[in-house]
Image (cartoon, rainbow, N blue to C red):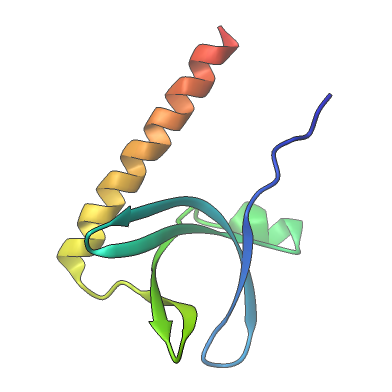
Length: 101
């Protein structure tokens, strides 16, 4: 069996200097910017089971010549991006179901 799939992982450091690991589920690039849908990765299986299943949307920004991620603060933009990511996820899972048939 070929394990060609390797998730894109990223580590973010919060304001308390604590590291958090995420998988990049999807990327949207449009006239408003570049955005990632991130899903938390846990070291502890129990935390993974207790997770709510929510993903986070972050915007790629450039600060001092370096790319960084920032929360999307515009509620309307966040709703628009959420709808687009959800559509991508549905299409992805629909394609996987078709392949199994």
